[in-house]
Image 1 (spheres, rainbow, N blue to C red):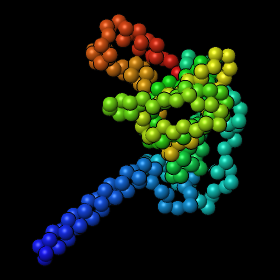
Image 2 (image 1 turned 90 degrees about the horizontal axis):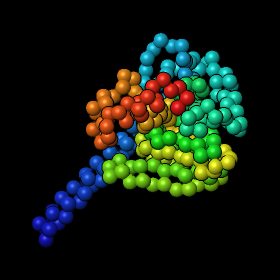
Image 3 (image 1 turned 120 degrees about the vertical axis):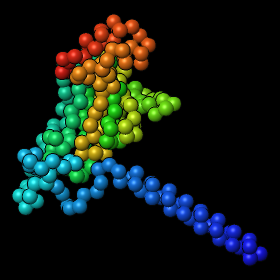
Image 4 (image 1 turned 90 degrees about the vertical axis):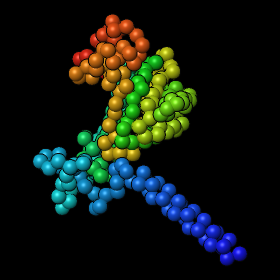
Length: 235
């Protein structure tokens, strides 16, 4: 019996150690991006010469109500005709709203023309929570290997979440009317990497040998695809 009790004690200790380790790892993952601020607010000082991970703080005693306000007019539709993909994204982040600095949140309004697409892209630093304002969208995201697609058709008032750093997209299914959505993102500066633009429009370009091998096509097709993105500022 004493030996059994000793074994049970050792097993219990091992289990507690394992649980503690898992909790520590989970806590690290939770705080890995946009950590909690150390003061009430930190209005970004865009003119500060100091380079930090984010932006230096404006003197809090010089803060005004205007620092916490942005006349973004997100209730108004944006033009989508100038875009080849018939969509227009209006970002509200720390770059154009310094009051968001260190607060770990930003917004985006997405307007879609008829059959407009917010093409496959990722936000490397943020989870995205999308609310449909108008219209019907086909949307989804793709996981890391084995690249499983989670997609759905959503309508006005519906909400869909795109996990952080997953490739995702949206498309307006209507042939004759626009659609719109509002997205909340869990970073003051979520970043965006448009997949097609990054692969075929990078500067300098990725080697055509690499791309032809990756996509298993002829180089002439790679050159044509690259020509669609070089110098394209409306994508």
